[in-house]
Length: 98
Image 1 (cartoon, one colour):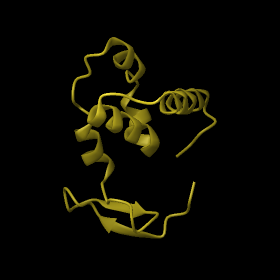
Image 2 (spheres, rainbow, N blue to C red):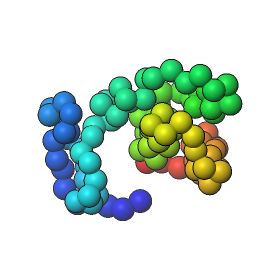
Image 3 (spheres, helix red, strand yellow):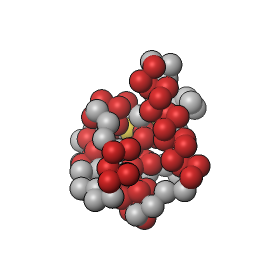
């Protein structure tokens, strides 16, 4: 993972600081990002896939982004699904820390 370059206030709540890695990155704190992910999922396949402990989403920006992409577009590519499952498997085994 890239090293953070600077901190910036969250663009939504304006109170939490976000570690920024790129000037193109949108400053969004974990709390505000998790609020966006609370929409219900109706597809049973994706509902089961995204049924993870909240701690996983708090710890991984990548997992939050994949779920947000599904909620926004209604579908994921095969590579996104594979990467999501691989990241979850690594987090469950304790290999990955973000």
